[in-house]
Image (cartoon, rainbow over all chains, first blue to last red; front, side, top):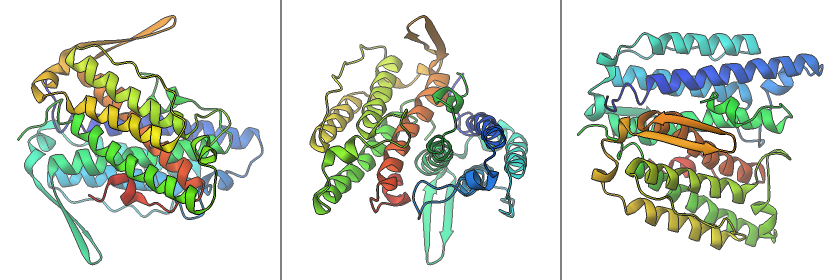
Length: 168
Length: 168
């Protein structure tokens, strides 16, 4: 057994999306039980200029579909970011996980040195595959999953660290 | 170049602690400028039963000093968790980073299959080194760094994603 770009990415993302999916199921049940309009939770933010719950999930999805595609050298699928219910967020997660599971280790392994270029309006960022995964994708991905968790905790959902970690 | 247990751990932790340190400097300056008692920020939480800012930093420190020591097979240093100011949190971060920087790649590399056992009152968790790093330490570490960031954003500190990512 040795560490590989595949092992450090795809199974990590799939596992955390499973945990996030279970947390969102609890959030939907909580809204139902407390007669809270689900939109209240889906649009909740930790600060007025931070993204709401729905967008946190969308960005987590974007981070990993972009990562898998760039490391493997395939086209990044475009998702419409139109989710407006817990069911639609679950479908977004499932679509993302299905996309991730379509990659074989052989497609991702060996991408440590692959050049990855991210283009933004008026700027670009260049990475090696390894730096892109470890210093951009992973911190970014965990940022949005944790913020989704924190938004729900802040709004009273009874979840704990083991929901986030997935009962390791 | 190839991915290694050292590359996937020590430089990642050191870099994120550098980012967290800069964020805490901004928080201290913000408290000073706004005449906010620093203790208000240090004790701020996102939910009554979540840990406050100070504890988030301490747990992030514990996560990585435990990781480095366990993967290398050396004793885990015990830190007292008595920090009560931004300066003391910075010293905690510096002590943690100094400890991390004391490890050579040779001490950490090859620990993919090393058995890691975490003991809790009445329970224990067993991992391979790789699973411990990827499915326990990294999500846990990012959880606490992100939550520290989120507590400060929620309390009005003007920081953004690039402060968290460290201007990659």
